[in-house]
Image (cartoon, rainbow, N blue to C red):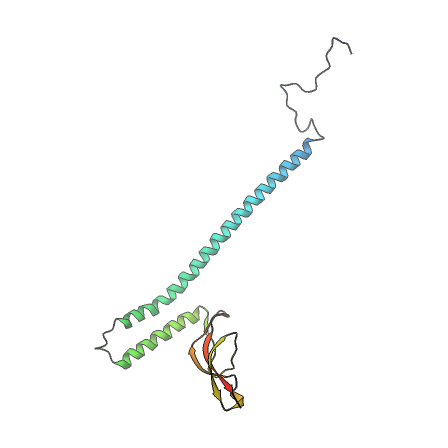
Length: 174
């Protein structure tokens, strides 16, 4: 090489280095960029999925509530007709019969969506579905721990306890 000659430049300012020209560093950077991009896309997709499932869950709950309300409208209509009766024009027996009919219709509508009454009177006390309010003495040992009276009915909804039956339990005091 001559002192007057300049060394040949490998990079000129008007030409950019491409990934093919610098193989030792750029493939790793390209892979890192690709992985970062993939990670960001997956994170965004997951966020969209989470938002969509939350929205669908909310909409599903709203639809289920609307279906229940729709089933309760007929008994509500009957109850409103019953409540607006002139007691002077209706006999007590007719009013009682109307109230019982509304009760049956309402229970039937609720049973159709999964409500079931808790079995109580005459059955053994079960603290998982019964709530003992008080006890009453019994002379018979075989009646010990049996339910004597039901103060308030209990209900299960599709197998899940909604409200325990409030009961009086017999206790043998031999």
